[in-house]
Amino acid sequence: MSYTGRMYVRMFLPCGVWLAGGSVAAAVARAAQSMPGSFGMTSLYSNLPAWLFVAGATAALLLGMVQVGRLRFRDRDCYVCGCLLGAERTARGGLGRTRRCLGCGKVHGVNHRLAPHLRPLARAVDEPAPVATSVRSSP
Image (tube, rainbow, N blue to C red; front, side, top):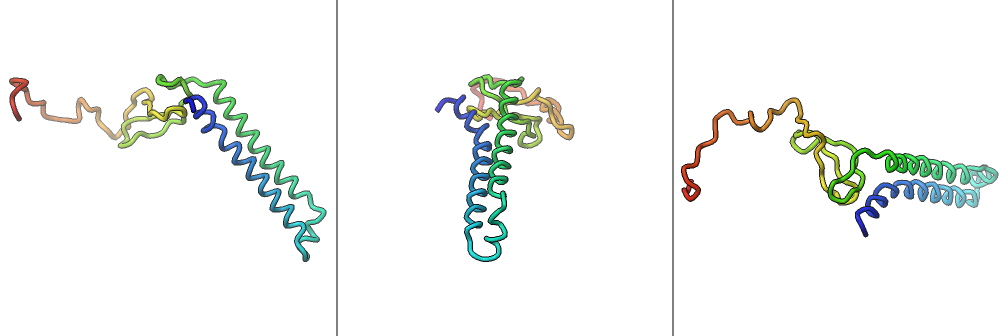
């Protein structure tokens, strides 16, 4: 599977989950209508299974429209594979913000901003680095 195909699967898999969930809920409600007793008789003329399926299909359609909008109006692409980048998240250790590629999974920095409570690396060490006299000298 290509990186682009993997990106599409990651983006549209939740739509399929919502549609399948609505279908399963409708099937369970339809099976409950055939049960003997008062519950089965009171829900016999109910449109609950149809409404459950419509709710799942509507949620899947709305989520699919959001994902298509993300694809249509994307502003950041992965420089490795060209796929869409995910949402911004705080990097490990508070070192700025990152976005993960939906295709290849690589992590990309966003403007290389540092968290306000961390000092930049150039000023993190107070004492100067030792000067090496020779490349072959042992420490």
